[in-house]
Image (cartoon, rainbow, N blue to C red):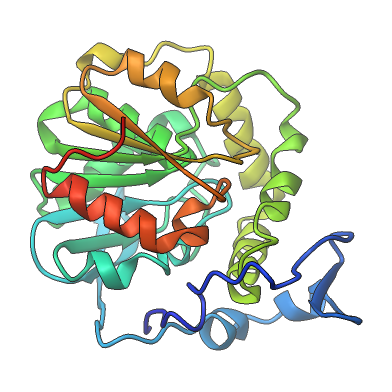
Length: 305
């Protein structure tokens, strides 16, 4: 697998008219609509349409977790950084960030159970068990301590892990972490997520749609249900000691940016960065600013307010 050039998946083109129409249609160009089902029906979508080009070649590895093989990718050299995707996601959601971050750090990318290339977990997806699963994966790979970058649901999982085993977390970057969410209908999350990618490239929109369909309704609904339940259970914020950078897109419709200051107050060492002209996928919409902020923070510089 190769990684994204600036002119493919990760380019941010605000003039690209993606979706402003029903889910079954995708406006590729003015006056032309393509059936979404035809774009997404073939497995070759992931290898051809979403091809990533870079001089940085990943090392494909595998380790057993609970008796099941888990495929993961390692890119770059330096201190370990574990990238944890969110709901509907996969490792491809970091396509806009890998090239820059891997220049200074050794990135570990893996799909969570039931998402991306991972098979559904035995017994179905369980959010409460995913942090423990990730700790087992770290032990299997031999990682004793790492930085973490988590998006949305992945940010929630990173917080759980940091509370369970604070000694294994160096620094946390949480991108619109799905915590302290207001109560809302489960079905209201998916469609706004698709709409939030309308100002990105066609390629990134296809990543979102393809990964959503591949996860399937059972995994998605179970994950959303678990997220809603998790909002009413106590997360031990006092146990989290790692320096934390919270990053939010100012127009995030899934996890509102107003949660950022509230979460900052709950964490002992946290700063907040609001990225302008971005929504829930700010790591793709404003990749240059996002990458610069993450690199600076991981290097120990002061980022955000």
